[in-house]
Image (cartoon, rainbow, N blue to C red; front, top):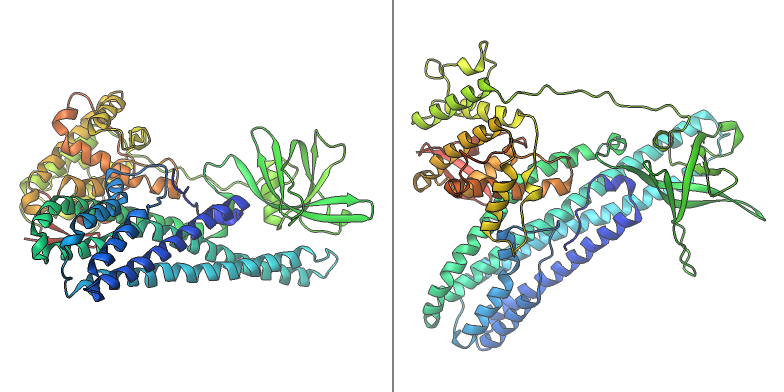
Length: 588
């Protein structure tokens, strides 16, 4: 089990559990940084110490052998498993050819040292800078919050407003630095899969190919090298297909308004201050609290530093909740809760007025409940008109052999979309394919196959095929027909991959997010995009085995990338070149 994903929404709660998970990422970052330093140092030893080359390579292979990739999420793709095992494969290869090594290539520094130093500077270095900013803003915010909560409610209204505005400013700075730091540290975790492995792979290849004594070993290495390069490119493509989605999610989660709109969470949680009465007076103790609305369970975990004793969580069952009047207590943002376990109410202080409203709303208190208006989006239907439209789009794409102009927005057709005559109008292929993909991603959601497909290494391709066959057999007839129509078209496109370079893997990257949609917008859901791509790839590669026409389909589920450039690789029309993880199209 790898590190759990860090959700952007957790930045707002800033819980102890979130901080602990973040610390695990930071330790892994330091471990990776140290590992890169070792690799760079050992690589230089190989380059500069010809006489001690055999010893240096042996040390280098040992360094690679002990490193294990950590990953985000609960499972890996086959390509990621291949990458995760790559350093061990490299180490074994080096140990076999150690006695035969005589020289290094002249450009070994450019192949190995510079890319790794660039990664440490541009990725790990930037991450550490964002960590410093996050820690600085965190300290400023909580310091200001402590001052703010100690303000007397009897101060002038203008003074209170100024204090509120100052706290809001510090809170925004803290939230922004926290979200940016979480985004960056997870990006480094993902990028190192290919940005670290690729330079090492290139370095090893140079050793093998330019050493006359290892020609035979080089020939044996080539099949694995090609397989690993394919895995690296596939992993890079999956990374690129999720990066834009994650960036958009990060931008949305930067807004504090999202704190009250955390999708799919059955609890409310955050810091509260509890009034506790002692023999010598009253004190306010800081707790991290969770309220489970379904069970009415209120859990308090002390956040006060107590080195001598470790206090366990306090669990209370809620009876009722009501707001404290301002004149009844010399603190702001207070409310009381009645519980079955205590004879007197528990007085709590929220961190702001908006935060108090959220707690009272969750507890069904007397505070007014605020709901954002729900705007229901119109849904397109999977009907005969849609089938007619998709068939016309596919027929046009597969029969027309040129592109007449660049992508323009697809206009709303005045007549029935199924009756549009593409050949009688000045439509271009990009417009038509964009319109077809827009229709496919607007069909209502029914099923997300990805969560149900076996992913672990012990499951073979036949196991996955069987799972897809079984899961999709129960879907409606119209869904099966639509999928059969689309996959058959993609099979035709991939049959010309020798000319258009559009392989099933590339098709999976393009249509995986189009055809499958996650149930919620979270980082964990974004990480499933790579598995969506693989499902589409399997459907294309094993079209005859799956027997789509008689058995299988699934409803299009996830909106696609807004650009349809990647899709224009049909039937020799477009040549797709893969370069640094981006699919670039060019005309023949």
